[in-house]
Amino acid sequence: MNANTATAGGGVPEGAAGDTTGGTGDGTGGGTGSATEGAAAGGKSAGASGTSGVPAGADRVGAAAGRGERIWLLLRSVGGQNLGLTGALVLVLTLFGWLNPAYLTWANIKVIGDAVTISGLLALVQTVVIICGALDISVGSQVGVASVVSAMVFTSTGGNALLGIAAALVAGLLAGLLNGAVIVFGRVNPVIATLATLAAYKGVAQLLSKGAAQGYVSNDDVFVFLANGSIAGIPVLLWVLAAVTLAIHLLLKSTDIGRNIYAIGGNDTAARLAGIDINKYLIAVYGLAGVVAAGAGVLLTARTGFGHPVSGSEGLELKAITAAALGGCLLAGGKGGVGGTLLAITLLGALDNGLTVQGVNPFWQNVAQGALLVVAVVIQKRRAGERAVGLPT
Image (cartoon, rainbow, N blue to C red; front, side, top):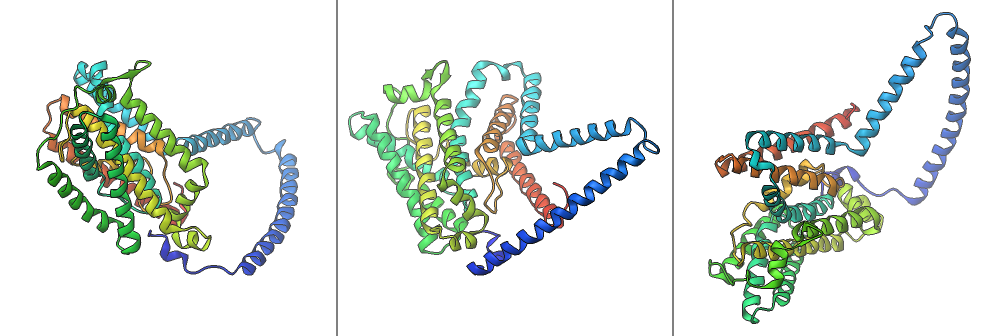
């Protein structure tokens, strides 16, 4: 399923692996002893010469340099690419705040937050799909289907919001499972498969709605609470985003399921040899993507007040992929996390809003987004090349 598969070759016999490990252990032990003796000898030599040829402050300078290097390496290991994203976000906020003071008002920040919630949910679940070595281009269309279904069921049941939401989530789950089934059982490339279902789901949404807005939910307490409610002064939309972020983070970092997802994306051949059911995981991951996309569709319905097959959902798939790539997800799979993705989608939302506030043609937002995706891919390629030849990254 990913670029690493070709390098995996075949499995290593169990006995051979054990022999190799044993040999390594012996070699390591001998090497360690020699290194220790050499270090001791070197220490004596350094001590003997320290009083004659080495300036007294040189040791302190060397130690300080070593500490500085360790601090830098620590920052890179903890923050990594997120440090650059944070700096870029601060730069964007400062620039547009200077150009237009209204940009940094609470009202506009809430607008950014609302917009980031919808795209952020898709970016988070796209992160999971990419880590698993796949891709889902159909999430935007799934948002449209869920939006229409939630509004239509709400109307047909006499205003039952919970049934409308449940129906939308079921529709999203079915759409996601269908994606996974096509990829696994049809042996279709994930990009091709979800490109096809992107068009298919868009057609389904158009057929269900007859190409027009459906329902009116703005007078319902549940939808109004989702769109405009707040808890402890924080909008409900942001609480939803925070909850999904935490859930996905725990799934990836604290469970065997998450570790297996990373293993599949890193090397699916090795994962299969380790006994991981790759097909089951792929179908489950796409099912999760469908449910989260449907949740985004419900929130979109709550925000706009009606269900629409297209409005508000176009271009979300590209934004989700861009955010995941900028956030450090390796598009070949096996690497990534929700922290970088969340920072990246916030950066994209702040940039889009800033351009809008400045009256820039909305089409330039797409240009900027595409350019950022290209930059992210180029950076990934460069880092992969540096690792391949042993250069520092």
